[in-house]
Image (cartoon, rainbow, N blue to C red):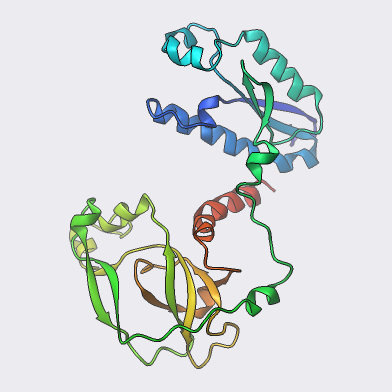
Amino acid sequence: MRAQKKPGAIINIGSVAGLFPMHYEPIYSGTKGGVIMFTRSLAPLKRHGIRVNVICPEFVQTNMGEQVNRVLVDALGGFLKMEDVINGAFELIEDESKAGACLWISKRRGMVYWPTSEEEKKYLVYATKSKMTLIKNRFPSIQTPEFFEKITVHTLSHNFRNATRIDRVRLRLPMEPHSALIKIIYAGVNASDVNFTSGRYFSGNAKEASAHLPFDAGFEAVGIVASVGDAVRHIKVGTAVALMTFGSYAEFTVVPAKHLLLVPRPDPEVVAMLTSGLTASISLEKVK
């Protein structure tokens, strides 16, 4: 459509399983969730005259739908008719303001665009007015420790507990001129942690991966700058920062100052945005 410069509407078929997790059908639920997120990422195509939306019905009375436990279906108000789905499709076709939208169809509530305004308020992140606002938002200075604790990988294993242990180590001083010492406040927990502890992120065979032992665990975190190297000018002690570097499962970590991201506060929501937000941002950039 874009290559031929022909405007139009595309409707992806999702499911309510993509909006609410189904523990008994995790693969199906995850797949439909991916359809929804992919559709939302295509909203910028509207500027080319292409509107991509997704329709997410609850249980529809089909051969497949009738295999679902009737108790669950009745709890949601009963089966939808195929006409309900068709009407939803026409709603998305005729409303030219919708692009990247998710239309949830249920027996109880009818047609509802998801997320609703109330739901959206729960996870909106509001930007500050300027970078200077972030720099001025200082926190109390952190006392530089002589020793600190961190989680270190000593054995390659998919079992995180078996692969790691807590080590108490001495802080190496003085720091490199372009480095910064960060007091970790919150660290992110990832499914990839066990891939890392099992050595899957290293090239070569198991023996070559074992040569990297021991190494620090943890991928991202937020914290407060406790100290900076002599050459660091753009970040001050007491500034809240986010980081995406190895070694975040620690009380303190030393990283190149150029890798630090200024944030308003070292809140846990920021940690989630480092991976999830970056994934969404990259997706949108690839679409443009």
